[in-house]
Picture 1: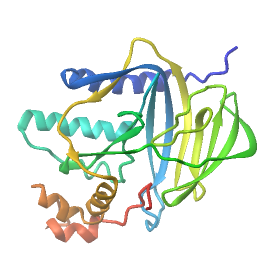
Picture 2: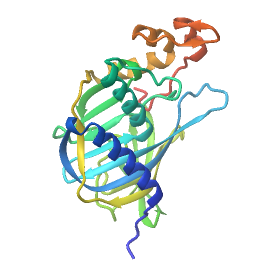
Picture 3: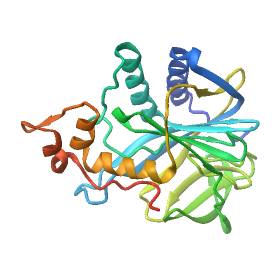
Length: 277
């Protein structure tokens, strides 16, 4: 029996989310590849290390794998993105989802689109969607001697240092795709588990499913052209000074009877971005 994890309920939910936003904006979708396989990961990360309760933010990542490209995105981020896009198309103005979405965005990544590059979109609430293109990273993976079984697959471990964090990945050659969640790639098999050694960011595969008659779509719409450094700096500012940031974009939020920059200390925090450098 093929050792494959099929969590039907979760995949129905995730497939519904993906299908809904792609159908709603179908005229803006550009098909760039055909989906061979979809992989679902649970992701947990520490949004701010200084929070007393060390609250972990939880989300789900959907990884779509095609013959030439892959596409990874966080489902909650996409939900808020779609909500604001709908408002923009109806009223001509972007709203804000600052309160329901407090954590730093992990982002949406197209691997090998364009060829040999990553296209990365970062949800920035009322400010729009920041987009940049970067080279596919060289993770300089060091294959370890560890082994364990994850969801019925025999896995080996690999280590790397990437943009300020040490990571350990567990991959299986039984699924011969070089991809993983977010930007991670380059191992001789699918990444099923990955975490930084401080366990501030963890990704765990919870479902794999073969797909047919589905496309990897690129959403053709207005983006803010950026670069990686500018995007990360903007995101840090948005989360550290939310009152000021939102007011600059025409949104006034009130907390304890105060508006605008008076809320920076009440609501802002030093975000723990996945990329530290």
